[in-house]
Image 1 (cartoon, helix red, strand yellow):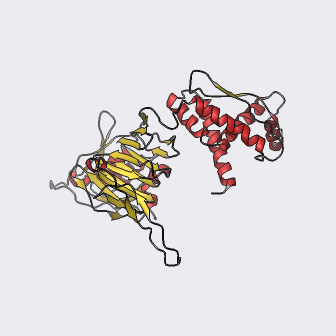
Image 2 (cartoon, one colour; image 1 turned 180 degrees about the vertical axis):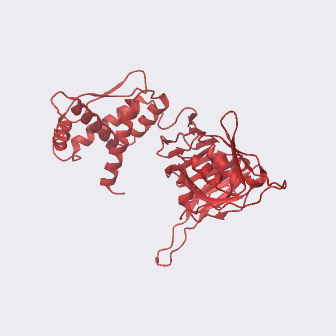
Image 3 (cartoon, one colour; image 1 turned 60 degrees about the vertical axis):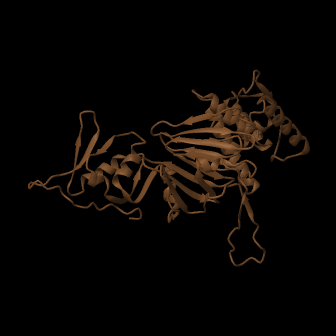
Amino acid sequence: MGSTDDSRRWSEEAAHWWVLLHGEGVTSAERREFLAWVARSPERIEAYLEVERLVGTLRAGTVRWPDTPAEALIEAARASIRPVALPQAAASPVQIRPVAASGAPRWTRARWVAVTATAVALAGALGGWLLNSGGEQIYRTRAGEQRSILLADGSRVTLNSASTVEVDLRRHRRVLHLLRGEALFQVSHDPARPFDVHADGGVVRAIGTEFNVDLRARYAAVTVLQGRVAVMSEQQARLPVPSVSLTPPVDGTSRVRPQIERFPAPAGALILGVAQQVRITPHGMSAPRPVSDLTATTAWTRRQLVFEHRPLGEVVDELDRDARQRIFIDSARLRARQVTGVIQLDDPGSLLEFLSDVPGVQIRRSPDGASIVTLRRTPAGHVSSAHPQVNSPHG
């Protein structure tokens, strides 16, 4: 990623943090997340300060927005030397004074030194928290809510609806427990600090990759989106880790011998690669299976549920995470029926609309407002066995 893309990303993230920190209900955990983000590089500090200065300029009495040209607003913001207070991480607030700038931003030696000094002061105020969290942090989402968390090590955890994760960043190991729901893990590369996610009796270990873990009723599904992970039992995870040698695949065009990667996994651990999935159950792990469509795995981050030949009962259980309307299927035969389709999570009623058109299916409302889905009985007393036709995701 080029410097221009980095600057744009930091500006967008800085704007997100400014809105969050200046809104109502900001939590201490979110303040710690911000401090972890801003102290990782001088560029992030500068990006946040530019947002702060721009907002201050927009609030000035001399500015008539939107009549004032954007270029003039940016120039006025850069010329500001108004002190900026960052959220507290210690007993006293950290006060920093941004360096005045004019014209296009350039990283002169004086500017670099000034902003780096700010980063050092901020890190000192954190009291070493960025290197060692000093305890577990628990992050939760409510029904219908999703949340993206930037950890102090640079990794990102995105939580699906009604999910809970416990994070413990130690000096030599990163340990997380997915206690409920589903999460997407984007792991910052650090071979010296394995990244372990505990879920449903199993452990997923990474050193720098991207994978999704989904806790379902009977198993936990682990899907690798980038890189490699090791999947093992909790007992295996406690064993010594003589690193496993992994040779990257050869594409046939390069004459350079691929470099061998050292992966901190114990003997017997299952190594998964890109587009592979394994299921962790109380009785052990399934064999790896290929995933033909990785976009379907992360569709929930786009507020979609994509399912292909999945039991209807599983689909309904996953929709129940949003708890926007409760759906019960009181027929075991109907719960086991395989369905394929795409549902917008913001409109879970679309599943009921589809089911209402399926021959042999009956939907009724219970007194508490839940929807009861069952197979309609024929006049002869037999249960209808009509099979539903579900729209294809590509249809």
